[in-house]
Image 1 (cartoon, helix red, strand yellow):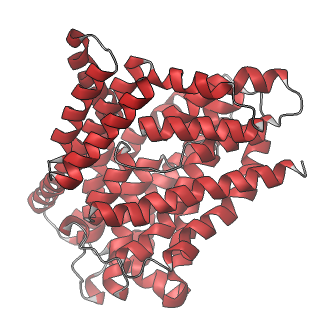
Image 2 (cartoon, helix red, strand yellow):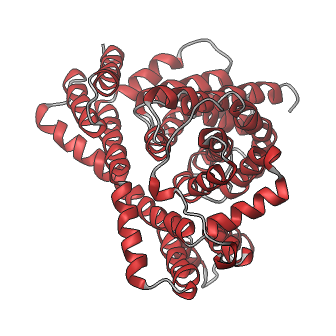
Image 3 (cartoon, rainbow, N blue to C red):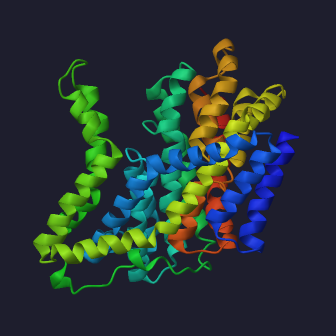
Length: 438
């Protein structure tokens, strides 16, 4: 009955948005309320679940997304995005620009939390699209495929990093295997798949569409790249320095503080405001008006993400995720395939890749720890691949992509959902093939 209730709840959400054209945030709240009733949550506790879901989702994302929107608008308005785009096109050529964007997403995505990478790099995609006249979806999918691969497969991202100790895996081997599987996966889901998406055209949010500036008025290439990549540099240092410092180093707490994504984005915005704004002759009032406009343009995105958090929390509080996982646990399958399948099912039901991965891990961990024939490093990757499958309307990433690229639901499914599914399937195939030789 619980599984049927989840299916009915998701069907209602899709109908409200796609057929009756409800505002997505309202549709989420209605679906969450109906889901709470169908799943047997006491009526007095349903509002608490919804509020907790909204708070927990926005608590970790709201400030980062807002600061990222301001940072992206600064990169666009100052001409830095235009300068970076010009250099990229000159170095890579228009023919290989999707490969350049994929590699950018991969390199940046290794140290960068997915949502931060998204809001930082999507404006660059729009800048490239505006200058090359190529479709934004065609250019954006390779970059986002690379970000998804790093998010699901590679430490130090939250989900794979959290799974390593649960399976007594080796973080170094997991990273190595993740690179072996992730590189061909992102090629397939990125430039190869993007080749069939050239007919999807969109009108991205005006906030992230740069106005072209005379070449003489642009900031230098060095300054543009430095500011744009400053968050990446800070997060990379925060990840690497603890590895070389002594265990009791007095600097560790400061590094942890400075490496927090919220602090990183705030520092990057402050430095960028001076270097790309004030130093370029843009007054502070103009900059602040620009930042205010950036917040207005992403308000819907924040509310949609909040709604997704409400629905997710109702599913979690009802215990339906554990019921589904327990049912699947007894199915006689290859353990790696089983781990992938459990993560896949929970991902479809809950939306969050991280929650899906951690929940699936709690189910299969006893099996991994008691069966010597299961490679724990590959199980981390199998669950990571399953947790990326079939992103749809209960996933905040789905809505971020849809709203940033200003796409219809149909085109979002054809591009984003298909790309995420290719990553999940190719990742599973890579895990099963690698299992034959390691």
